[in-house]
Length: 328
Image 1 (tube, rainbow, N blue to C red):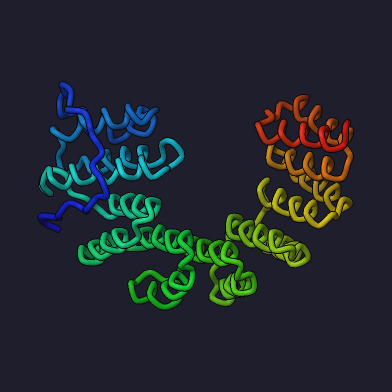
Image 2: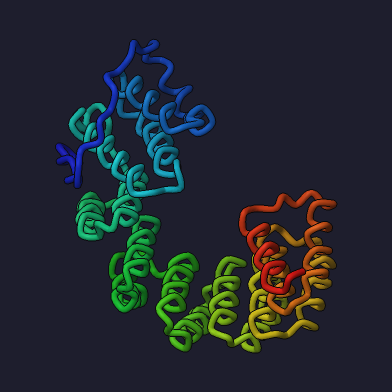
């Protein structure tokens, strides 16, 4: 695709002038070492500034590594996403003969637009991907996530079964999981669960991430019995639950006051080699404190310290609130 225009940005992000650059032959080494060397946002931007004047078409891989590192910096907030867009535009102005973008570049860009809440620019970039004839399997997932995050789940539901096959990429597990999670977040519990069952009918096999998303959504909707059924189905299909899976169920049991099932799930968790992490422990602390059992909560806290699980702000806040409420 020749002469690609730069993508519009909602604001310019200032970048430093390029410092003296090493020999251009270092480009290939950077393409492999960018993620490890870009330990901070400043390091990544500096590396970008050094690489751009000496780039050649093969260096798109290095640029993609750098843009990914930058997009993940500082919790993936809108400011780092805006910076990625600004750097992308600099790449575009460098001419396609120097830096030829590929589908992976646009995947990063679209994800940034979605995190910035600029879905219209995300879809515009998606149009460029289609025009270029690149594969759209990975590029379309950030758009689905962006639609779900902005409460446009029905549009995501339309894209999933109808438009994705038209684009030559039948829905996969990742796409289904994104939309299922979006439906749960939108309060459409039955529709989310039915979409999960549809995966099985279409012979699309859920991963541990998909199963956990469904279990979490059902537990948050106070449908813990259905969540237990999904766990059993998961185990029957040979998909091993992870720490997060068990924690979601423990949260559901705590929320519904099923203390005995909490104990049972902790034992099952331990039997499968998963110890409680700080999130799990905080749930248990909260459960005991809210029920006036601050002594039990303290035992859990002491056990955390003994096993090397580092408490966080939530841990201390939960304990202090429990002590204050019950004058413990």
